[in-house]
Structure formats: structure tokens, C-alpha cells
Image (cartoon, rainbow, N blue to C red; front, side, top):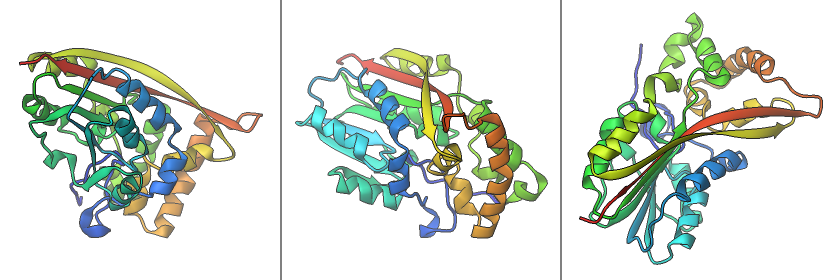
Length: 279
């Protein structure tokens, strides 16, 4: 089986065929489906009680609409973002964000990084506990760390994607593109210990966000904006339509269109926040 190394940002997945191996994401479509992203980001950033941070970094900043809110909250700070998608970085810069193209696994904090956020990106990095440990070790006294990630491995959507991707005619093409949360995300106490062992006061919690999507196949269209993007990027047009034709009926059965024309979806999120006392 051919394997690749994903380039990591909030946009997530991988595309080995475009831009020299960098991820290609459609920022406009991503923004159309950003309501859940916004809610989770607001829940996370609300727990960061930094008063006058010098530098605020958003790892996996995506199109920058949420990162820009950090500049309004902390106008005296240098606010920057990192994302693996050229399209996302370009859009973030349009929002006034000092965005850089890069893989978050190659990033390390500077001595003045007082707030570090990683929102809905870390679950694309299987080795992320080691990465988080390195970041925490380098953050200064008084700093804040916050991350959130989908944490509903085994739910209907992820199970259905895995079911189709693991079929023999798809397995060698896209198996390594599938986000398998159950193999990546750790139990909450692992993140609690990571923070506590490195001198941070931890706060770890889970919440379930409910969404109502409108229109036929609205959920499938929503998934194309992020979780299914790595698969779509790997396949040619004919292959993608074939995958979609197999996946869509399973999704409709699991998440039926209601009489009022809506589809309801709930997502469990894991939140991790830590504050290091002044050294």
C-alpha cells in the first residue's frame, strides 16, 4: 500500500497529488460549514484567561475567520496562525491574520508565546501527545495552552466512512486517508497528565454539539468540506462519484432527512486547557 505523510493544519487531511504534497482545501466551502467550528472555538478560547499576552498562535488556523477574533480580543498581542493549506493561508491573510504555510509538527513556540491554541487539527496527527509535550516544555511561565478535537470515535459517520473505505476495491486507494479517531485520540486523562506533568494546571472536559442541517444530502455536503476532503483529493472525478454513490445511501439511512427537510447531527468534542504559573 502506498503511504504518505499528511501536511497538518485545521483543514486536516492530505493530498499527495497537488502542490507538491501539500493539502488542498477549499476555504470558501469550509467557511460555508463553519458554524460548529465557531462554537467549539468560542468554547475553547473562553477558558483562556490570559490578560496581556505578548504572542498568540493558532495552530491549524484554517481560513482565519476565527483567528481574527483573537486579534480583537488581545489587540496588543502579535496574533499569528499556521496552516498546511495554501488556500487556507491565503484566505486567513485576507482576514488580516499573519498566517504562515507549514506543518504544525515542524512548529515550535518562541519565548514570548503566551497563548497557544490548536483547534480541530490535532486529531490529524497520530503522534500528537509527543508533539504537545514538546510544545508545553517550551512555553514560558504564565502561558496558556488550549486544544479541542472531535472525540466521538465509533459514531455513525466515522464507522460508515471506515466501512466503505475498507472495502477491497477502495482499501489500497484511500485507507490511509481515513480519519480513524479511535486510533488517534487518547482518553481524556492522558491529556490531563500531559499538562500536569509539565507544570500546567489542567482543565479537561467533553461536550456534545447539536447541529441542524437543511436540505437533501446536506450532511454529505457538510462532510465534503472537511472530513471527506482527503479522500476526495486522492480520487479522480469518476472514482469520487463512485465512492460518493456507495457512501451516500448509508449516510441517509443512519441520518435520515426529517419531514421538515432537516438532518440532525451531534458531535462530541474534547477540550483541553492548561495554565502554567509564572516561573
